[in-house]
Length: 112
Length: 111
Image (tube, rainbow over all chains, first blue to last red):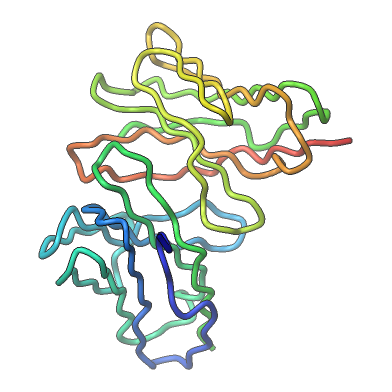
């Protein structure tokens, strides 16, 4: 099993550009999560999903969109990149709402 | 969601036990206590979790007070590789199982 895979690992965007951060897991997990982590801070929940076709907002959803068309994939979309979205983004998954969550290695995004 | 309070930083001597406290005085009956750690800005790593009883695994032990308002994570023989930020999290399975991270405790294990 590869676990949780995030692509790309690094990306530089210009203000106003859009991009999609990819997240896929091969553990057949129902629950998936997107977090962002600013320097020196804890992780903040952006969006989460409890199964295919179901998504919900977390603590900091503004400026982002998600979709969950399959169990395996949970892409995060930035439509109009802003410097405030410069951060490290982590995707995670868990089988249930009370089982161990596995995290990907992160995507480091810089918006200039 | 219940909040957690942890010390900002702690030091521990290599080979000694590291005891990391966490306060979660507003925890509800169906909320679990989870511990994760993050090394060098890598993805967080699961350590242990519990509801009421004390728990132990190959990495650590979790001691939860009888009133469940606080807990302690114990790393029995800390090594330099245990230097990391440790997060104590209260999690509710029925509300999407969201893991809401606080600031965590930065543990430095020193030779």
